[in-house]
Length: 259
Image (cartoon, rainbow, N blue to C red; front, side, top):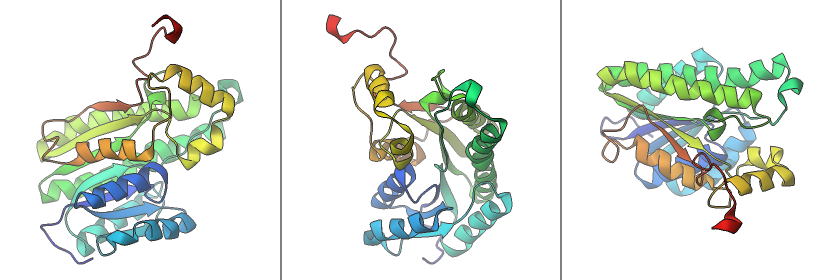
């Protein structure tokens, strides 16, 4: 891809699988030029094959969101080689389902380092570039576990709660530069991470509380992200947390046999 000022250019972290990959594909379909980054080299290679139909408008670059210098280089290379950065999606993240009393300090730090510090690192680098070029949009990926007290999510849920508040603070501080900042908070989504940690019992619990009685798809999250990052369709929206969760956070007492 060669640099051009008339391109809509976005970076998607965690772009090699799950929500990140689905989002990258949707953005490409909607005319964006996408630079995806992930620390998993094998997943990056597979993602390049999955998006081969869009060759010429995307690239996948190995990178670690916990390394601030690497994220600054990523933004710089994107702007030099593709065009001014107008969108960022912070999809890189990890999760664990571990009871509070079994959660170690090491696990807690690791999850926060990737989910919170990683989001901060790339968002700070991207926002600086957007400020210099006249604005843009940032969409963070939070979670319904950052909005409510889900069992087994002491480390993960608190990290996503931090992402929620970071999103709001960025929206407040960056609005003056024409940068909108919003967040999508997914419910249970059929991703490789979820397949790894959700047992049959956990899935039954989720399906009982999700009003639509199913898990969502990565593409359903990607469509919400694509809306929020689009300066024409969501130009007056900033500082918002959109739960894309099949009605999970809206669900109180729930006895479907009585309805």
